[in-house]
Image (cartoon, rainbow, N blue to C red; front, side, top):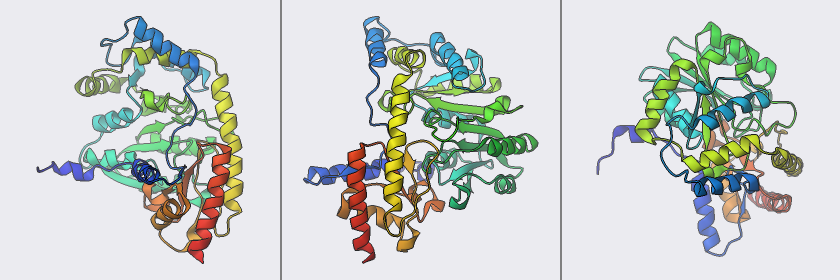
Length: 389
């Protein structure tokens, strides 16, 4: 069977490949500590699950409007204000099955051959993959350790050309755990306005901010009309398997993106949207408890990694990832990734899974218990000592 040429431009997520390898080792009787997959290890709160059950019992099992049921879109509009971000009318909000469709639909609606998409590197691999698949040219914006894995506005400005169509931001950031400051975003907003750029702002980790309150680029004058804000329920409410996301779009993009939904998924499941309302309007204590636990785990894993000879690790500002530097071992980090899994029983990801500027780094997700993290640190230290020896 001959595949379409564009399939060669469509990448994947290495996390799922490493997970599959780890599961294979477990099937052989090996004990594996999972620090590779990017999802909260908490259960979805009870009140959200009960709302889904009630939705099913009430017969919410049929087609609904493609951009989302009106009650949920209005709840999202109110939630944005409560989360400290600028309000938006419900008519600008579109609900999708997961947050990735917001990336797909935004890029498909805006970009074509000859256009350029600037994206962070290291960064979520789907940014580059989707842009390339759509026929645009992905342009990596390096995130450097010396700058706390935050973009350099001057470097960004130098990458912008007459063909630049879209800039992708992610803060707090996967895989580095960094977060853009208000000053960073103010500089980016100025560049976007001066160079007439559209911005896709991926804010799925906004609630997992430790050092300072989250700042959205939509807060700056002139940016609401040129920004697509991407968010969802997966990280904030431990709902990865529910596949629920939303986008806040400039008015002129709402109809085209709605058409893309109609042509692809028709709509997001009706009963899950009832659960989504419960998440946004219900008690916030489960989120606060989860964030506090993640902060505790962050401190444990950062201290433990920095105690391993040859490793140094910055303290992340948000999300649930650390991105330690392992350049001292002077071997490709993909080899270190494989060595830690095969010899140490610890599943993690090479920084190169997130772009070429990730070479020399590893990503560990600390979405696991403190005990599991401590066990993993001991195994990583032992495995790395054997590698260097």
